[in-house]
Length: 305
Ligand code: G3I
Image (cartoon, rainbow, N blue to C red; front, side):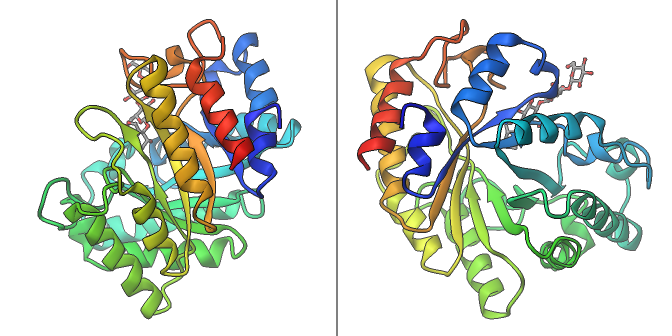
């Protein structure tokens, strides 16, 4: 393959990117998007604050622009994210108890229903575990509605869109030895044992000096896959530049290709200047849209894998 998407497709995988609606009018951006990628994730536009700005008042314009554009050039969508402690609309932020639980479930149901049949995989629940060594759930207004909020969200999503794959998505779950990774693993194992509907685990994989690419990343991917779920690399970016960065991108791709149920890779933006990281050069294209060394190593790995 001569593009990331085409090369990934040769092994039945996808290669995606986060897409920002307000950049679709940028010609350099939209040219690279349509040429290279066959999966899209809305970077912010499908989140709770964007899609339900006031309670029961749904707003899909920016998200629909991304879906329509990506479908035009033949890319599918990952949905991100139905239930999350962050980027909640103001009206939800201070809710609690049964009213918050019901508002969350209504949100999951309405948004999944709106996009029914158009989403390959939903991040149903995002970032529900605490950082550090506790292995505990993250404290949040959603968690305080009861420990079963996650499975309730998955059941609501399954009912609303039975054909979408339903994922649990998190960061710092890349190193197999980390307490957070083990805690997510045990939750997924428990869900599988009790037939809670879950189909996939997303590893965001934002790698930097504080949370570097771990040498046991392939073990993490294959261990989750052995639970009977797909795994996806959902928000990849890698701090650095030049050959070092290119080699890490290559390693990540090779790890995914080595795991049959690693179904695809998404980078969290197109050009370095599109990255959520205020400084740094974590992506595959420079600010002018030129291919970086990391682009070439990624493409080569997809092709030789
Ligand atoms: O839309 C407003 C705009 O009206 C306002 O003028 C501007 C001023 O700051 O802010 C705009 O909102 C920003 C939004 O991005 C859209 O650009 C928010 O401040 C900013 O916080 C928000 O950041 C996003 C971040 O999630 C929020 O948590 C990033 O773009 C997005 O890349 C990032 O993505 C997350 C994933 O969803 C989950 N995993 C981690 C990843 C990186 O943080």
